[in-house]
Amino acid sequence: MIVIPAKIPLLPLEKEYYGLNERNFSHFLLFSMATKKTSNTNAGPVDKAAKAKINSSLSNEEKIQLLRDMIRIRRFEERSLRSYQQGKIGGFLHLYIGQESVAVGSLSVIGENDHFITAYRDHGHALACGMSMDECMAELYGKATGCSKGKGGSMHFFAPDKNYWGGHGIVAGQTPLGLGLAYALKYQEIEGCALCYLGDGAVNQGVFHESLNLAALWDIPVIYIIENNGYSMGTSQARSSKFSDSLAKRAEAYDMAWESVVANHPYVVRDATDRHVRFAKKESKPVLLELKTYRYRGHSVADANSEKYRTKEEIQHYQETMDPISVFRKTLADEGVIDEDGVKQIEKEAKEEANAAAKFADESDFPTVESITEDVYWEIDNPDQRQSEGRMFFHS
Image 1 (tube, one colour):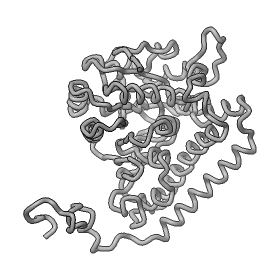
Image 2 (tube, rainbow, N blue to C red; image 1 turned 180 degrees about the horizontal axis):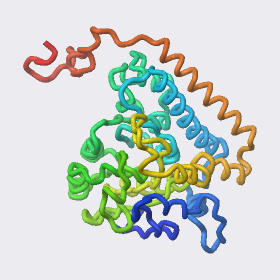
Image 3 (cartoon, helix red, strand yellow; image 1 turned 120 degrees about the vertical axis):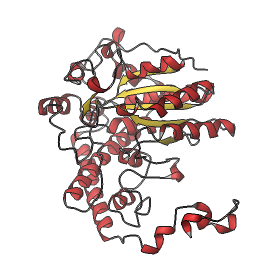
Image 4 (tube, one colour; image 1 turned 90 degrees about the vertical axis):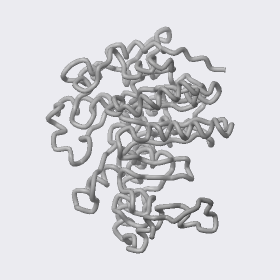
C-alpha cells in the first residue's frame, strides 16, 4: 500500500518556484538539476528518480526507446510547422516542442486499464501512446486517412483503441471528462485510473475546480496533470494566477494529494507519475500533479507575440541548459547506453519518418461530402445496435 500525504513537500531545488516575478520563468534557469552532480547523501531529483524501481529496472533498449519517442515528437512537430507555413494545414497548430519529456515519461508508466485525455496541445501524447505519424499528419492536413478522418484537425486527435480519449479545444473542457473516465473505472470495479492533462492556463476555470471537488468527494482515481509551461496563451503565470509557491498546492483545498516537480527529465516524470498512478489505483483517490515544463514556440503558430511577453534570451537559455532531449541524451551517454552515432541514427530515422508522413498526408484524399453525416451519432452508423428511441433530428 502506498500512503501519500495530502501535502507532499517540495524538493529542495523546487523551493525557488517560478511565476513570482514579471519575468516569470527566470527562476527556472536557476535549476541545475539537469547537470548537477551531488553526493550520495544528498542526491538531486534526477539521481533520486533514477534509483526508483520504475527507472532502475529499465533495460538499455527501453531507455533508448524513451529517447527515440521524444525525438520523434520533436521532428514531427518541426515538420508539421513547415507544412503549416506551406499552407497545407489550416486552423490552429499548438506545438509540443520543449515539453516532450512530459508526455513520453508519464504515458510510459500506465497500464492496460489506465486511460488518458488532454487539451489541444495533443500531438505529443498521440505519438507517445503509439499512434503513427501518418495518421497524425493526415489529420493535420484534414485528410480522410487521419486519426479522426480529417474532421478533427490539430486539436482533436483520438485513439480509443489506445485508451486515448482525445485532445479538446475548450480550455479545461476535458477535466470533467477525465473525471468521468475514472468514475467509469470505479463504477465497473476495474483497477485503473485516468490521467487528465491540462495547461496552467486552465487551473482558473470553474469547471476544473468543480471536477476536483467531485473527484475528492467521491474518491475517484483520477490524476490531474498540470503541464505548467509558465505561460497561458500570451500571459505569464505571474499575471494570471494567484498562488504562493505552487499551482498544485491548490489541491489542499480539496484534501487531495499533490506534488510539483521539474519535468525536463523522463526519469523524474516517470517516478512521479508511477507513484501517483499506483496510489490512485490502490486507494481510489485523486491526485493533482504539477509538471513544470517549457514551450519553445508560441501558444499556437498564430501567436505573433511569443517573443514579446518573454525574451529570446530566456528561450535560448532554457534550450541550452534544460532542453529535455539534450538532458536525456547526456544521461544515456553518461550511463554508457548510447553513443553519438546511435543518436544520429535515431535523428535520421525520425526526420525521414516525419517527411514520409507529410508525403502520405499530401497524397491522401479529403473526406467526401457524403461523409459529413457520418461519425456524428454512433447509432446512426450502427443502426442494428441502436437502443434509443425517437428521430435523430440533426441527421434528417
